Image 1 (cartoon, rainbow, N blue to C red):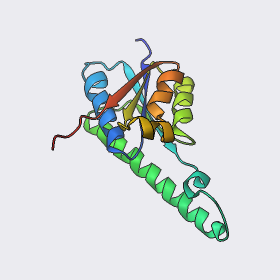
Image 2 (spheres, rainbow, N blue to C red; image 1 turned 45 degrees about the vertical axis):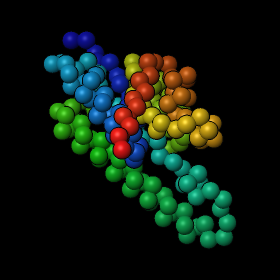
Image 3 (cartoon, rainbow, N blue to C red; image 1 turned 90 degrees about the horizontal axis):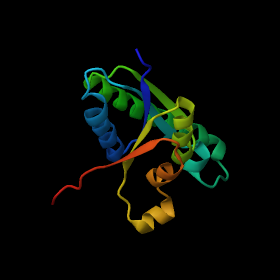
Image 4 (cartoon, rainbow, N blue to C red; image 1 turned 135 degrees about the vertical axis):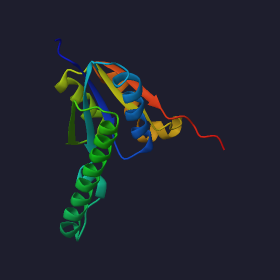
Length: 158
């Protein structure tokens, strides 16, 4: 039996990320009788310093609290993603929490796992927000050494 290809899915605590995971499972993983992909779920955990910003007096008391909150958030995101996979009968998964900027973390995961495809959600930011915040999906599309699937969540009608 041939070794399975690897699909890295970038996850975070957004609806866009969950939609991208569900889309990938529905369209690329569970539609085949013998799935060809091993799934690697990757969560980029922000560093404590990047979450707090400027540090001043009292930082020693705040940093452990922020770090514990970031770890709790990472666990919740991973557990939610694993539950979605389990509900879709997907068992061949690996989950990783890596501290750092999501752009770099996802591109590094592609290299580490020799991924064939990277799936990321799109927040649907306009040009100005993308220019200011930077787009993880845009960065990955240009820098990941594999196919990149950017999944857009459909807009809800008012």
